[in-house]
Amino acid sequence: MAALYAKWRKQSQSPVFREGSSAPPEQLLQAIWQHQRIRRGGLRATDGRRAAILHPGFLNLEAGPDFRRALVQVGTARPFECDIEVDVLSAGWRQHGHDTNPAFSSVGLHVVWRAGVNGPSGLPVVELRNQLDAPLGQLADTLGQATADTPDHVRGQCSAPLRDLPAGAVADLLGQAATVRLETKAAELAAVAGRAGWEQALWEGLFTALGYKQNSWPMRRLAELLPELRRGLGQASEPVVLLARLLGVGGLLPNQLDRDKLTNRYLRALWDQWWRDRDHLAKSILPKSVWTFHGLRPANRPERRLALAAHWLAKGDFAAWLDDWVCRSPKKPSPAAALLARLAVSDRYWSRHWTFRSGRFAAAQPLLGAGRLHDIAVNIILPWLHARATAAGNDGLAARVRQRYFAWPKGQDNSRLRFVRQRLFGDRRIPLRGAALQQGLLQVQSDFCNRTNAVCADCVFPDLVRRYSLKKT
Ligand code: SF4
Image (tube, rainbow, N blue to C red; front, side, top):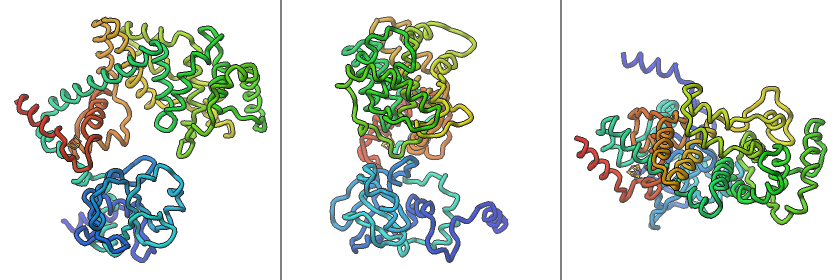
């Protein structure tokens, strides 16, 4: 029966590597590294020094190096924490542009199938081809489809006490962490409000979130300039007027009108406005170099994010609508659906274009994906409402905001959540009902995992969980 099963298994898997191929695919090399199917005891760097892998790092599913936060010791030097890049050949380093990409400056070890020229200069290199713990074909069979399994070293030390905790107690613990996260974010927004006022604090939070990781700072800067940018416009205004100012001050308005007819007409409308404003806003114009476009998906271009912000601003009653929203209790649509509908706007130009240069697409695309809108509601809008209620001493309203927070539906799963879940729970399935518990998970990561290394050195969370568990039983 086992032989039959083995045959089924083989038939169900498309081969990731065929004997006789000149080199294995990078995905297989990553799996080999992740599962450490190497001769760990005698591993050598290409310069002959012994390489001890104290932790192989965590597989990175986003842009940047393949493994994050590895712990490595080369020769007799002190162990160091670094990222690791895996390539088939040394030359992949330059071919893939890692030598000029700042995201790769944290790489401390280059792992390759075959070492050669044009790799990173000054980094230790580990060549895999003669240092595997089994024949490559066998590893390809074993690991080809096994990347979804959690290798033991990904699990953190808290996964053992957490495994013994009933699901209800896990939810309670994560719920407490979620409350801390809500209050922490609310306190940050309250600090901005203390300097700039509540509405300004909301815009700074929203713009920063719209910039996502790559462009949060220039977006935040534009938000800080909003009082100047909105001067003379009154409460409500045309989105195109606001967008012309945002793009103009952001240094994102192209000079030439040499695109298709529709784009030229649209650019002319923006420039008609920007001509009038440019002189008095000249001092605030940002250099285009503050924006990051490298590795940015076209859908996430700042021009589209600013178009969305211009629509929100143009309504003039954005903050007042939120105040009203938290006090209302409509059955249909649900409060979350009502808020998301308010946030999701369409734009005649930007719903059908990624950039000023891209062609027009037939079907309209949202200016911001549903997952990101969820994040904005949970990370900015609800904390902002909570901060205001708390500052006003309105306990009833603060409790109402917390209730909305805990009732908010679960957001899309993402690589960060998956990673923390694997660290804390391994392969145990934890039902995370609602966005708040996902936030709780991220809070544990920020409070504990981010303060130590890959082997959880000195992390007190496992002990805290054990004590909590004793109280619960
Ligand atoms: S660092 Fe702490 S909280 Fe994070 S996985 Fe390790 S033991 Fe758990």
